[in-house]
Image (cartoon, helix red, strand yellow):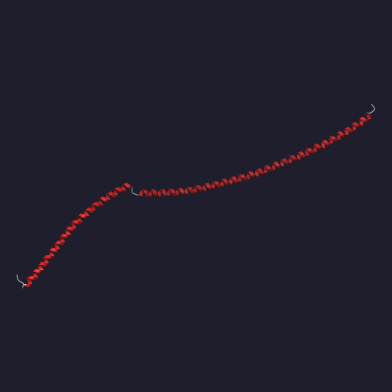
Length: 170
């Protein structure tokens, strides 16, 4: 087996090739690790950017919700004040109606009073009619008496004028 020198050369070449492959593998490994580290950093940066964007969104939404709640609270307060004013007006009106109702006479009392007054008026009318007829009779009597006196005076005047025309004797 004289080829030992050839084997050594082949072994040397194989070892050199193995060494070259090992260094290329090491370079590939380092290159791959650098790329993975770069991708990890890019992914981390992207996650941080997304987190920051989400935080800004949530902060803006929180501000908007807070502003909307404050506006709604102010609107509710205004509505409560307006409602309170309206109820005050309604209560004032109700009080005015109650005061007016207290000052008014109930229907039953009114009807009793009107009935009593009607009876009194009827009594007064009948008394007035009786007095008027009585006064009319007395007045008629005076007229008759005055007429009779007038006739007597006229007869006396006639008689005196007749008596004077005859010479004054009877």
